[in-house]
Image (tube, rainbow, N blue to C red; front, side):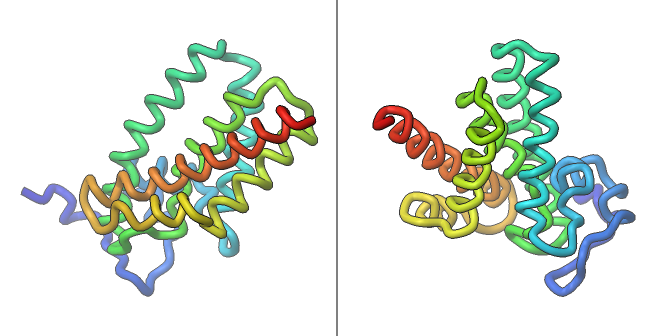
Length: 177
C-alpha cells in the first residue's frame, strides 16, 4: 500500500525546492537540512555543512557517542535516501547529500583531533574520491542501483567507500611522514 500519494513526485527534470524538502521528514534528512538545495555543487555544499556540524558534535559528544550517532545516521539515512529518491523519481539524485554527511563524519571521527589543515585535507581528499570515483569508489557506485532499499543503500555505500579511500590515503601520509 502506498501511503505517499499525497506527496509530490518530481521526476527527472524537476528540481527540488524548500516545499519538497518540508513535505516529508525523510526529505529534510536526505537533503542535508537544506544543504542539498544548493544550485551548484550540492555534494560539496553538503560536505561543508557536515564538516561544520562535526565541529559542534566534536565539542559536545564523546567518541563513543559520535560512533553511535554515525551508526544511527547510516540507518536513518538509508531510509531517508530510499524514500526521497523514490519521491524524486531519480535513482541517485545529486540533491541527496546525507551520504556526504555520513561519510565526512566517519572521516573526521577517525582523524580528529587534527588542526584546520588536516581537516581541510580530509575534506579535499573525500571530495576528490566522491566526485572522481576512482577504482573502488566507481565499483561501489555501480554495485547497488535502482529504487527501493537496494538503491537507497547504494546512495550511501559509494560515499562510505570514498571515506575509506580517504582514510587510507591519510593513514599512508601519516605513516610516511
